[in-house]
Length: 284
Image (tube, rainbow, N blue to C red):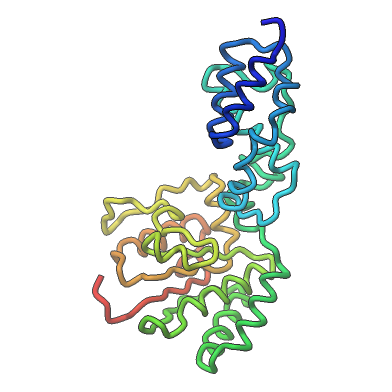
């Protein structure tokens, strides 16, 4: 073709009904199979559409509350490059810019750590302050005890017991806010996806710790000591584990065994302060 008008019209029409993910697939297909004359101009003209889902992805997948334009464009380029690499190509083959943010090693920090530290600390401090003022005397005792243990760095193991509606989730989220507002890492996990959504940045325990599905008495988690996840666990100050009553005890033993190995410590969970929550007399 004598110009890229056809590809511009194609992308403009597609943008009316397709998502950013679908548009990136279409854009890379044009690059790979149709040899546009000026890929860079084509990219720049349609950048807004190509990256229209990237803000949401940065907020949900990377926990970046307020992504800037550099991060949004970098993620779009990263996604495009991943598709190109499947066909043995790269951004440089089409004179497209490289991402300025590395989403595999974000700002020199493994992605899993970047996700857990990209917090608005002032907002978390406000949540902690307001929540602590509203907490009952019993809840404050729990908060004070666990916060003191985290501050000491000596590790500890706690079980927050109580039936539904007694404020366990409130206490858990206040603890998460306090630790994260102090630039420390707190991991929030639960036995199920539904329970995990009630915790700030919560995930299922199997997803976070790579617990084997076919759990056995001597199982360990599939985490390499040199991986970014291992580095995250070594840097963790607090683990909140909700709805523990519905999980097999071998899951906790596997995580304990793995953390002791990764952290080179004989303490419970490698010296990380762990807070279980649930109902003690429930059957698992």
